[in-house]
Length: 486
Image 1 (spheres, rainbow, N blue to C red):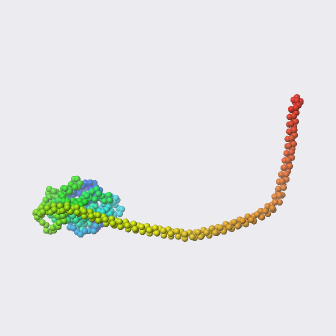
Image 2 (spheres, helix red, strand yellow):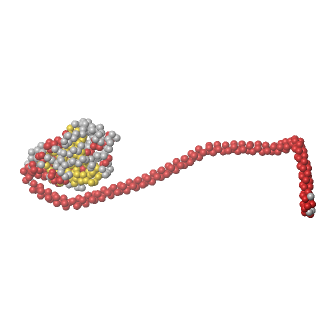
Image 3 (cartoon, rainbow, N blue to C red):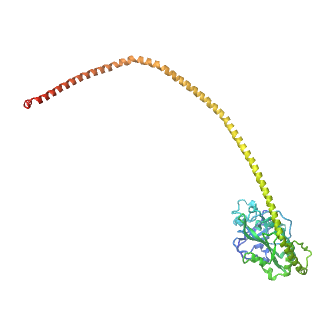
């Protein structure tokens, strides 16, 4: 058995949803949700660490089981039983907080918008509503709500039960599975409560927004664990919404992971009622070919069904040949429809671009006009605001000019009046300066006379000294030395 963590899910957004809990390691399988598997033994072989077991609960009761891949962000299968269908419930999509944050206190499924910032790493391990918005895919239910009664339906609208499907494929899947279960499987299982259903998806490498894997095929495995039990598998390819291939459970298991075993016990192929299985496959073939299936309250006996088997096979071959012939025309019609749709889209896109360009031009003109008006009003406002400032500045300049004139007049008057006043003052001061200068003049005269006398004395002494020197020289030259010595 796998040791992956198992979450018991509940939804408290709607009245009556129960509290969930994390299954302990010593508990096996899907805990309370083991009742949705034959012999309460879940499928084996899904042992990856990113495989999370979820027990979906409502009104404190398990409603179906889901094996969820946190790597691909889609369920690998949902296990459920057929209940009396009810009218379709309003879609209220929910997420499971503990898949992303096991330590979180929210032990129940809630609306993504109601979580706020209370869940760490929201969307790290599961898909969110935002992953589907604008992607061209819708949330296709593995366990269709149309196969469940009212309170079961509410539990199916969880993102852990949804895979990305195109709108046409989602509609085709729900229609085909609903018809097969109601018209083929339920009428041929003697004990309806022992009819076990597994609806699954095989992930591909294609991802929505680089996060949520798009299935490459959808499959349904059914097990009637009753006397004269049987099992079978159905596969729908994603690239062909009209496909619905029937095969044995063993053949289906080979298309899944290595070592996978879907059913145990009385649903083993060696213990099946071949007649029952052929009758079921006959009805499935009728549903696939679009024939009207008889009402379940008037069922045909097994011998009657087997007796007409050859005729049905012949008509089946005819339908297959007709289908092969009609396929190119259908594909051509689909191509023409696709081209028409693309042309319509292109026309609307072109019109949208034209409208966008016209509206953009008008808005640009309005914006430019608005900017011009704003600039004009701004300039006028600046001029009006500057008028008082300029008037005040002119007044101040006039006052300053007048004061400068007054200053110049006063300065000129002072200079004019200072000329005669200076002359008078100098004239009045002349006698004072003259009298005061006499002692200095007399001193200078006396000094000059004394200097002249001293100069005459020095000159006379110099002349006498010169004559004395000349006389001595003459005597030494002409008088004999002996006389000169005497």
